[in-house]
Length: 190
Image (cartoon, rainbow, N blue to C red; front, side, top):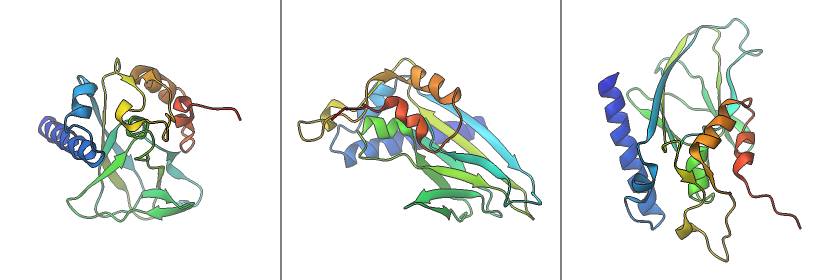
């Protein structure tokens, strides 16, 4: 697990470099601001369920992280993403990783990159095992749209807060789609 986690950390760093470049930012823009990044791994086991029509493995939500790396069980479909109002199953590919963009990256990019709403469904006949790794800034890091991505024509959509504040909000609220991200939104009155 130690070696796997170290490799996932390097993968996340590289993905953030590519994300920064895609936005016209310095390649180390995210790495510089993340400080000592928070990384956590979780293993999920979903046993077979006789009534998958009644039981979700995990309620719809978006992740509070910047990136989430998922190693899926190649034998069982369980992950679904919400695309255009419809739940779509993510078919496992052997030896492949699924990368989810989290709320933190949505905020930092001022909404140019969107966090993905997803859920896990159960299976009548098969169990499912997954390994989930989250990668996020240090809890002390102040988050908000990066100044380079804000302009007169693209005002900030999100307020400033620390990652620790968001994390406390995230873990003390129910998983309800992307509702947790409302914490960070700037609400304007007309």
